Length: 303
Image (tube, rainbow, N blue to C red; front, side):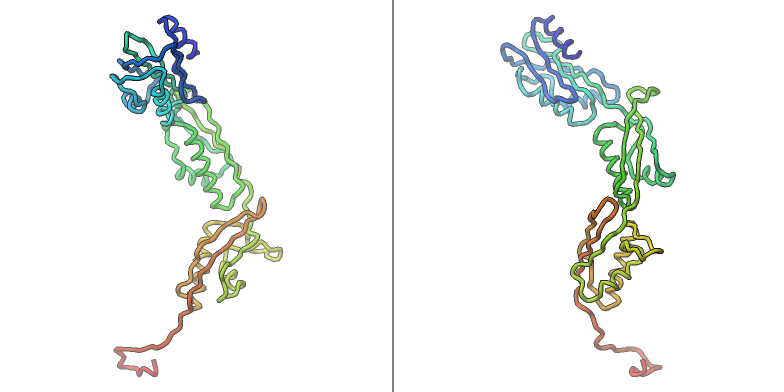
């Protein structure tokens, strides 16, 4: 429709010009029998409600008094600049009138919808409350592809920390008829089952047996058929505590500089993961000389 309107306008003016961009096409096409250099005599912005007109002109890079070649790439660049802001669902730039060497441009926009509300489906109340603190969904915020992707990533990361590696998040956008240019989001989350730990491997460990290292980790255990009363589910919070307990064991044994260089979590199957823990044990420390000062009541040999 906009393409047809632009063509009819220029047919009426005795010329043929179309400067048009759709959401799936960034750029424009110019149909002139002879290229011309024209001066921008005016820029009009239409179709907006929430975005400042001067800001749009600034984003476009087009200025009144500037000379542009038509056909040329400045209009296409202007459209691309506006599209990069992720504020608009449709962008069209066309010439409304040509007077001699002056051209009057119109930037016609359709703004991205604004968020009116959102709702979670499939989660417990406490999970919803925790996620609301993490996701940055504020009423009136522009809803674009970037917002949808970031929201989905934050939700997936949250549940992976809880051991739900097969979480599935679906976000459906629906027009809100109660508010102009607004949309609501329905966020459906299927957590799936928590993954279990199939294998824990300690890399570069020699001073302390693997059995003792494994025992020091109270809440991070491998899945074994005989372990009936201890869960082997992967929980990020418990795993972090157990890594500290692991280093605590080394410290007790005299390895004061022991540290975990890195650790990695990897998938073994749909519901199983493995953990590699890379250690740097360092040297073992020993007591050598012990001296006391200020003792008057007891001899040093007694102390």
